Amino acid sequence: MNLRVRERPTGDAGLGLVEVMIAMSLLTILLTSVAFTLTKQMSMQRDSKAREGALDVAAQAIDIARATSDFSTLTGKAWTDSINGESYSVTQSVTTYLQNSSGSPCDGSGSSSVAYKQVSVAVSWSGMANPTTPVRSQTLLSPSVTSYDPTLGNLAVKVKDASGVGVEGALVSSTGPSGSRTAYSDGAGCAFFEQLKAGAYASTVSRSGYVTPDGLSAPSKSVTVQAAQTVAVAFELDVTATLTVRLPNGDFHPILGVPITLGNTSLLPSGKTSVAGTGTPRSITSRYPYQSGYTVWTGTCDDADPEGTIPTDLVPPATSPYLDVTSAANGGRYHPEASRGSVVTALPVPSTNLGQVDMADITVEVRNAANVAVPSAAVTMTHVPWDASTGATYFPGCSSGETYALGSTGADGNLKVDTPWGYWDITTSVVGSTPTRVWLHPSSSETTIVVRTP
Image (tube, rainbow, N blue to C red; front, side, top):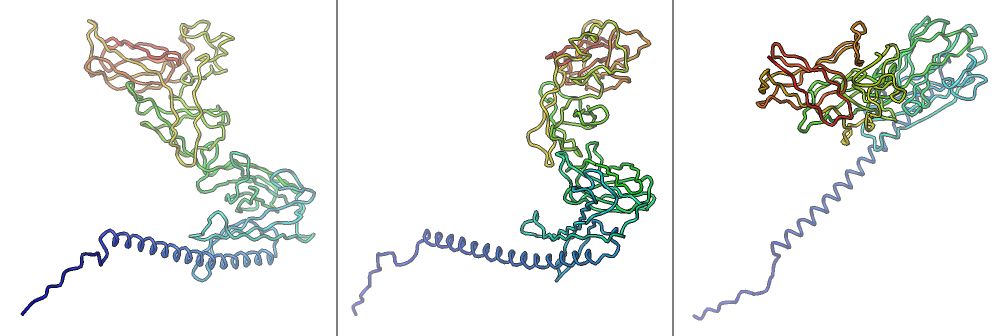
């Protein structure tokens, strides 16, 4: 029997591995695109359905406002509502316009008689496609001529941010002879309390994530309401911001627990405030976002401030080995011609562009009577306080001393550290050490201080 063997084709009759991989990649891209499109369509459908529900909620709120019988009770408020399983957050703000006044009652004076009210309703929900554009509805309502008692008065509370723009949605409360009432500020930042008995009222404002220039989250002010008049009071409130500041951390290490002082002319009463903290860099939270920013330095005494001036209530000494405090060129400054440095901006989100604080670079050398280095000696510095009774020829900038632990000397008896400017006594923990008094000022690049021990 003759067997005929068929030859195997030499051509490529199937798909190779490369072709299979390309096909799978294309299929994956296609499926991903389809899935994205379906998800997007479902999200848009859900948002459209939720927006229809929000329109119904807003319409109901407007109808309720129009049906209000006691016009004076129509004020701002917030609540939640639910339609078809969707939960909605509703904020109603009421803007009041007085007789003989064309603007907001918070921006000027006017009579106690109300011309009309503008009711605005904003409705939002979780998962909104654009959370910055809630559903809104408005209406204008006018009271009857006999709606108001001329023996009563009104209180207009203005809430504005760092740029002077009104803050909408701030919770405002008023407590006094007419009891306690609450309202939400409208789009112009105004909350209006009407038909109040004459007398003293305490007004408080707050909004989550907001703070005053003084760092308060719920500031309060007192005001007196008079019959047949509208009295206005204003608050500053803005988004809580953070300063991120770096202390020097090279060969000279900063004091771990040194406070940082912030400067801004709007800070009352002195234009500055000190904040405790540790480490570097350091985040200083709950700050008001001044558009002019903050200047920063370390230490709390007046002479630690590179632009510090002698307090006007103190009489400077006739002479001083450290500065001419009576010089007209000096202008009463501790450090003539020195600067606090660059301004640091406070931001709602901590800045990655860190502010830098300048400090005094000092090397402390601890030596005994034989001029031999003393290792492991703990070094401290204490601010020299002003004491007029001593007749001293120096003029330090603190009414009471402040003390910092600087660290310990190394094997060579030296310690390198960054400190605040000013007038200091440097000493060690070694019994019998003699403190060394030193004037540290911004014009010195580096200062060496020798402390003697027995």
